[in-house]
Structures are given as C-alpha cells and as structure tokens.
Length: 461
Image (cartoon, rainbow, N blue to C red; front, side):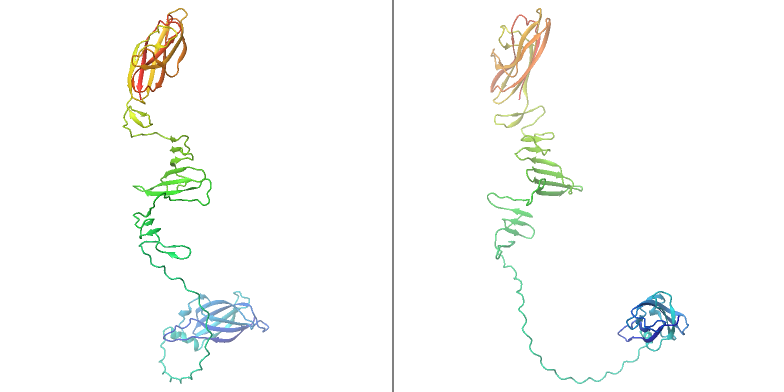
C-alpha cells in the first residue's frame, strides 16, 4: 500500500512566560486520501505518533495513539500530547537537548495495522516547551507609548420605563404585650395579645402564662384534652405513650389507649419500645366491666390473679366481713364448738333441739356459719325411719328452734345401726345472744333409741 496521507501543516501553539504555563501539546493536521488519491471524508482512522530523539531513526522518547474522524474534506486535526499514551510522558520530553523528530503512522480502516507515513523534524516552534520546562526567558521589552484618547461617543436614547415590581412580603409581626404569648392568625390579621398559648422558652402553657412543666393546661369548668382518629378502623388505638429508662439499662413503656369502634379503654406495659401489642394490665370494657390481667372481664370486676387487700386491718386467719352499707373490713372469726349426746324428741312430728348447742353474741349485720352433726340409730326390729334434720338457731334459752337452710328429710337406718348426718347453713340473726345447733323431727320416738354424740360449730364472720 502506498502512502495515502498528505501532511498539510504541523503547527505548534505555545506561549511561554513567567505568568502562564505552556500547553503540554502541539497541533497536527493532515488530509487523508485513499489509493486513488480521493479524499477519505467523514470516516474514522487510527493514528500513532512517535517523538524520536536526535534523528528520524533515533530512540523513541514518547509514543501515543488516537482514533480520529476526517471531516468532509478528509482533514484530521490532533493535539499531539493528548492521545492515548503508549510509552514515555509528554512532559518528560527534553526539548532543549538535541533535535526532535515526529513519526506518523496511520490505519485508514480505524484499526491497529499502521502504515508509516514518514518522520519529520520538529523545527523552532515546539522548542517553546523547552522554555516552559526551565529555559531562561529573554528580557522584558520596553513599554510602548500610550495611544491617543478616542472621541466621546454620542449619548444614547433614554430607555423605556420598566414594569412595576411585585409587592414585597409583609413585615414582621407587631409586638405583643405579655412575654411568651404565642400569636395566631384570625383569618384577617395576626393576633399577638391573646391568652391562649404561651411559650417561655422551655415550657408551653395552654390557658396559663406561667407553665411550670413542659406542657401545662389550665382552665375552669369542664376541661378536656381530646385525641381524635379522623378515619377510625376496627383495632385502631389512640392514646398516650410514657417511655422511661430503667435502672441498669432498658426501657419501660406504659401506654394509656382506647381501642376504636367499641373497644376497651386499656393501660398496657412493655419493656420493648418497639412492641406494637404490649400486654394489657388494666381494661375497662364497654358497659363498665373492669378487668385486671384480662381484656374481657365478665363481671363488674374480674381479676386474673391473686387479690391482696391491705386495708381494713388484715391479719392471719381473719375473714373479710361487710357491714350493712357494704363496707368490708378484716375480722377475726368468732365462734365456738360443742359436743354432747344426741337426744330423741319427746313428741313425734315436731322439730326439737337434739344434741349440743353453741351460744354466741352477734352485732347487727354479722353472719354466722352453722355446721351441725347428729348421730342417731335404732335397735328396733326392722330399724327406724322418717328422721328429718335441719340447722337451727333461737334466742338464748329458747326451747323452740328456728330452722334455716335446707332440711334433710326422710332419713332411715337399719336395726342395730346408727348414722351421722351433717347439715350446715349461714344465718344473719341480728344483734343479740343466740343458740345455734341442729333440730330433729321423727315419726316414732320409740324407734330412734340408739343415739350417739353429736357436734356443733358456729363461726361469726
């Protein structure tokens, strides 16, 4: 292949002075033609530039490649020094030491099969780079004479008046009368002397000009703080969250909340600030039932756990006793115990005392628990039948008992046997002194003749 690159111009533009750094490149231009001499227009070609030291065949001190695009005239332009470096550095070329030669190689197909276009010596202009790398500049020339002052130009026409600018922003709010008073917009103006919200720089007061806490609300009559869910859904909650650090690390999160759409009012506790469903400790269900440890109380008060009542003088063995007004106190149980031989009533068909009795004095409202055991039997042929037993009480010394509670009716025993029968009941006798025991009734006094000891316990609570 014959050479098909016609070099037109090699130009080096460098300015070296004491105040500007020389460009680290020089321009190269050429026209690319094909084997027929026609211009290769608007096509990518590859070029390789090598700077050689001392002669056209001297050692390479710098080499670079570059893909260039011809214009409509086949012209390519390249700043040698700004290509893709193959070896050496452009700034490291010793322009002041010996002659320098530029070898140009081209691949018109844009690849890397380069054809040598020849090697040309670089003449005077590139050696300005030598001055930029440390050469001594020449002396500064004399300052030229000042030129004559030109004539003053004619005054131009006055321009048209510009458009009126937009109205500026409203100025600062007017001063208030009370320190900390927070202004508000009433729809037309800023109000700075209201008595609504105050901010003293650390605490906020609503209805008070001297809040003592971070938030203090003051008012008269019925005052509320209201939280509203604008788009409520089943299961939504709204309330207040109290988060406090624990001694030794960690956090305790207390939440007072209301469950939307028919849910409970609840107080919950968690040791995890990110717990979305902490365990509920206290709940008030719709309708008024209260639950402790449960969110579904089935009574006015339902406690899931053991109950401890420390008021009302508690003590070991005491029982919780209510007065006539429902006020409960702890009372030591008062009672007695007695035993004696059970007796058969003297007349059939009539309830009468049988066995021991216990005498107690009670006050108004006190209750008495009676537990009575009767032991009776028969030696008659065929045994005995129709024994009725009931817990009973009467004023002290009264021979006619008053039955209370359930009566055991129609009891029977076999011949030469005896049985023990126990009855119990609770009675509120009122203030006074009373006898407590069991009453029995038989249909045949002769048959019930094999009796034994009975027992009575009576306890006031």
